[in-house]
Image 1: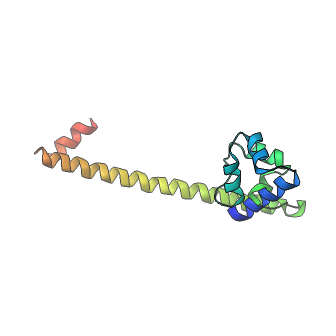
Image 2: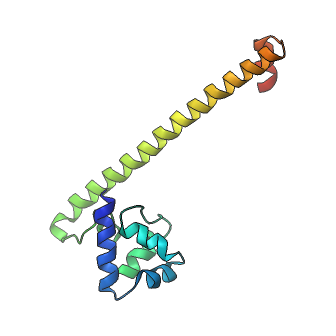
Length: 132
């Protein structure tokens, strides 16, 4: 997904509807700064307001994620492309979280070993008492 293209598309659709950033923000219950960030490609609309945003802009989610109006001849192809991109993003986020969990686990083990060493206890017994 091209956030800059999507942002420009949001701005274009908003203007077609005769709304300012502040008008759109008010209708969505968010700040105009959030709308500005979308339109500048710095962030994406939260999934919780995407449907309402699309309704206000008179577009569908597939068009929003494509950053353009979609003609019916290409609709299925664009839908598949957007779905693949969303799944890739989700997978990337999940992989980043796995790395974070692993790093935290390793850090906790190192801290446990340090504490055990400092207090002169058997590391195995100390770790056992922490987790049981």
